[in-house]
Length: 216
Image (cartoon, rainbow, N blue to C red; front, side):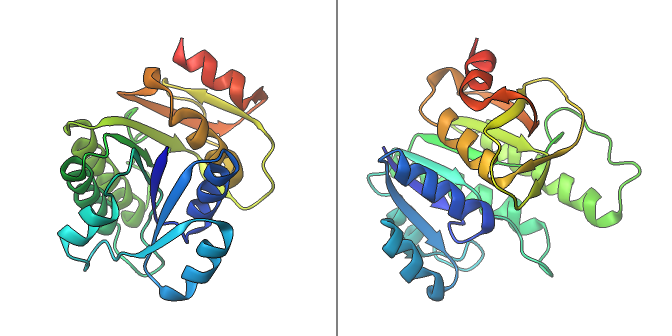
């Protein structure tokens, strides 16, 4: 597949790109800063400068030309409003529809689709979930073959290769970014994953087995 990874220079996006390349997919990575371009190209991916807030819509569409799938791995940086997550999702969903990139997989946050209560959260986290849920509505209301992956707290450690993956609400805990990337790449080609949102945390089930279980 030819896959466009939105947010390819982020900590999770980089791992998604690497895993896709390992699986012999053709990858186009969107980045906001040109200093990340050389690393992407050296890894074997194409790199395109895209700022989800400022880049023209037609430029985003052009970046998705001939793509089979889009992975949304972007997120607001420190000091940025979470509104960028919603706006970026909306713009890339519409661009994917126009470009004919029918498969769309978004990395969101645990509990966004299962009614996780935000009552005791900080105002910042309440807004974060508000934006994530609004973004999900853009995705699920689209014409795309969508899947949403909602991982727990992301940690920067080596992947374990084992996870807990479920459509039902699960206990909130952490998961490595590397395992998130592996699950993304495992779910992407699966037609049975279309139209579903999955919760993801650390666990004891090998990733391939966990994916097979939820697809049943």
